[in-house]
Length: 141
Image (tube, rainbow, N blue to C red; front, side, top):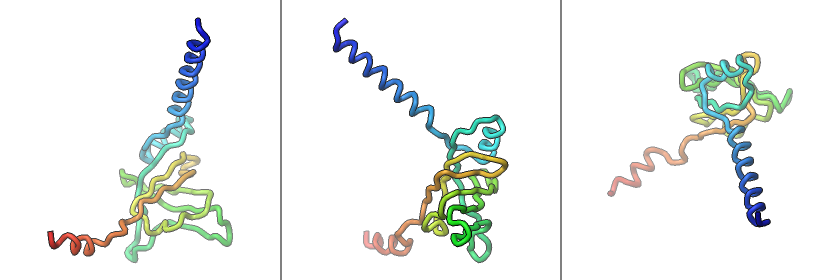
């Protein structure tokens, strides 16, 4: 066997190994119920949960607690998933900027002792365009 063939086989084997290792770390989108079931089974892999923040009649976020003077790396809030299940979420980092303005929140992490511990928080903020501006811009067409 030629050295180039052997080198090509080694490169292919490395590429397959990298793809398999990356695929094993890929997390999935689940509900809080499924995240609890995974944790109960001992599966501690990271999962994504999509949800919205609950608001009261004054449009204030319900269940959000953050006191940067006491502990700047402790942020907790309630998230409602797509199945309308309310879950306490803890994030051991500072509160993300514009968190209150977000329409939808995607968290990555896992369940621990009936609390979802988030490693990452992704925010979907409202569009920068106002509905009236969009209608006004397209009215002449």
